[in-house]
Length: 113
Image (cartoon, rainbow, N blue to C red):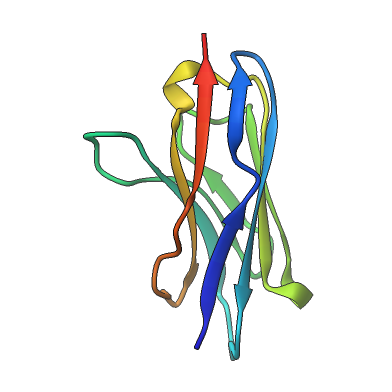
């Protein structure tokens, strides 16, 4: 059974940085893309960034210029480097793949002002 395991979250002051990691473990035949979502309390889950198998990247407007997504295809791992963090980035961050897998537990990111 394939599982997604996110890590790297924590508490950081505004302006700080965090690097999230997500590993997809198990037997996976083909991953076309990997992405990061986040969900703040009382809000819907939103797409933060996506990276395709050929390296195309796209970001939510709210994180452009501050976040960078990357991946290690050989290890089915995706990363999210988050710089210049803001309190509004506070959320649980989840990763997933295309095709979709069951969601993992996510990793909490809290940015204090």
